[in-house]
Each structure stands twice: as structure tokens, then as C-alpha cells.
Image: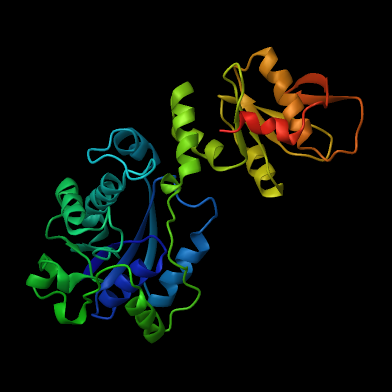
Length: 323
């Protein structure tokens, strides 16, 4: 017997897998990549949690499908920010169901806890997810199973319902008890891992789609650097630190060109169709974030084209263009 777990790398989904693994059922931890997870690479963490409980790890990239079918047209709308949580969860279950036969699985599991998130994990929302994903009966939620209707794996006796949990609400005392009893280490503190729940990131998406069509290759341009919108509509991205600079330098996107300088300072991107006025302003803004130990005119490279200007813009002045 085999199950596919929707796996985020968090404690709840790890505990849900462990409860099923302990009943002698093989579990594949399936991480669904929508493109809007943390800016940090969590692959090693997710693999570590899977190794601790004995689950196989796999990942499915649905970024194109997610943008095309979910992000901008959610049936159940958005949460507080740009987060279509109900539609998002349903899409993930739909994708997991799609690979059940290929992976030899008989049912699905998730780490959802009834009432833990008032908007997306109340009973009505959990039912909406089931209906939208067409997974009714196939999806077992081990953390709250005893508070929910029995599922196919419970009815058929594949899973002992009495060995599942009855957790309801936001108190995580029972999760901590289970983590200790299972000997789990290095698990993450609870918190939203989706950038779409973040107000500032949501504003960046709204600004982007007001000026351009959003595609998969545009996702990294929103995740890193200071984000600015210039007077003649050009988008400017200025690296904040060495990590940002390295990532921005590696971005290949026909909508942007790279701005570099021999000075000690940030790597930057600007809209490929930026006007001359916006390019001059961008150069001044980039210089404002360079180490201020230079005088006179400075030359920056916009891809291979040189632009020379003076540094007469302060970081305080730059804030008026922040998104």
C-alpha cells in the first residue's frame, strides 16, 4: 500500500506522513512547486525531514500551470493579499491525484489541521478544496481525521482511524508532543511559507501586471532586490546584498537588461524597453547604493552600452520610486 503526501517541509505535513508510515504504508512526499515558495532554497531541509521519517521525496514543477489556471483567475478568490489559498490547495491535490496511478499510490494525505487557519482550513474551505480537486474520499488528513468524515482508506481498513489524530484549532501543543515522541529534529517553526500571503510581495505582482504580461521567467525578478518603478514606466531592480547580486546577475529574461559598474555596489536590472530618461535616472539610483567613496562622473554598463552620469541621488530620494 502506498500514499502520496502533499509535503511543504513543515512540521504538520511531516507528522501526517509519520502517522501513516507507522501503519506500514509507504509514503511519497510530493512537494508541489508553484514558484512562490520561500526565497531560500529549502530542498535540503525537505529532504532532511523526509529522511527522518522514512518517506521518499519527489517534486513536481507546476509553475506554468499555476500561473495560467490559478494565480489570476481563482474560483474562490484571494485571501488578505494575492493568495488564492483554496484554489491553490485544490490545484495541488488535483496534480497529486493525476500521478497516483503512475506512482502506484492508492490515496492522498495532507498535513492540514481543521481550524488552524481561519480562512483556508475551516470546515467549509476544506470541503471546497475536495470538491474543486475532485478528491473527495481519496484525501486523508491524519492530523484532524477523527474530527472529519471517514475517507476511503479508513473505510476500507487500509488505515486504522483510531491511530490518527483529532487536532482542531491553532494551538500546537499536540504537534510538539508528537514531534518529541517521534524524535524529530531541526523542524521549522510554524509560519506562512508562501510569498503570495505577503503584502509587499503581493504589491510587486500587482505593479508588474499593471505594466506587463506575467510569465514563469518573471518570478525571480520579483523575489530579489529592491523593486522600483520609474516615471516613464521602466522597472528597476537593485540588488540588496551579495546573494541578491549573484542571483540577479544570473537572470536571463528578455524583458530586462543588466546594469553593472566597476564600483563596489549592487547588480541591477532594468526594463529592456526603458526610455533614455529612465535609464539616466536608473544609473543615478544604482550609484546611490554603491559605496560612496567616488567623485565626479561614473560610467555604468547597460548590457554592453555605456552610460555616464554623476551621482546626485540619495537613498532617501530613491524611496519615492519604491514599489
